[in-house]
Image (cartoon, rainbow, N blue to C red; front, side, top):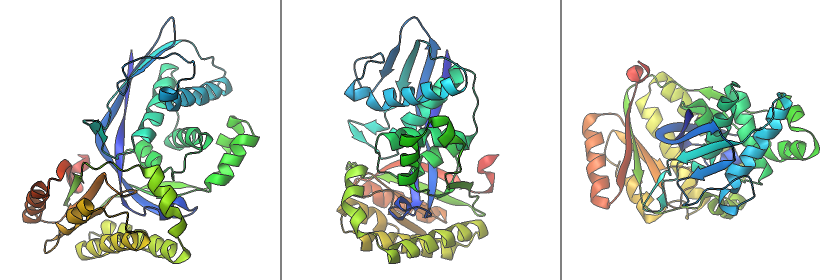
Length: 335
């Protein structure tokens, strides 16, 4: 039996702009995991704890994301001179509570999870760039409208600066050419790790309101203009620089700017709960904002002293916002 896992993710900055090629986003992994166990067996059996039934490879609408991921890996295995054989795959970790999802990128996480499980079963190791391409190819073939930033972060399992690629172009390649040819090409993205040069508390607040990212993206995408794009790119670049220099004032300033850019893009991004989550950092040595598509789900905060951290947590609790995750970021977090 082989076991693998994948994390969740949350955006710090660059949301919506990252949907355009060449844009930047800063994305942080969240160690709330999906897990898979896989082994060769007599028959194909796929089960996820999202559902109370298992399937084989016969197309099933509930399991379509997993089955399409398997189909793409089968294509890749053929390229590696291997043949798909029956296996049993068990997936656990819903990234939700009481039927309400957290908004941590669970669809991206499950795609990477299934790819990792199958490659491990066949003893194939691939670098993170190829893993990212394989996962992106699955979603592109499905017509997914996301930026693939969640995949970049989930694959790297680190705070990353992600530069997006031209998804329409790559989707066209995937339609016209075989997978192996497309995987060998330069897609024009970059994923680089960011190491903050200071200590701070990273907090995730969950509003318990479910947002459907794909609907939000569909709705808001038409509001994106050149001014928003250039402002967002400059803000993300300045934020990364501030983090790497350990400049607290500049970090707060750039995250505030990122937040204001989102508010200017659409009033739907900040629900009343997300607005309260953000305003809970006022008068403190801290900054908070929505994360990802907005319209519900989670927001984040960075706090630069102990008192500010406690105050935010108390304010969130009073507002009915659940502290989903807390982490001390700094020099010692890798040791």
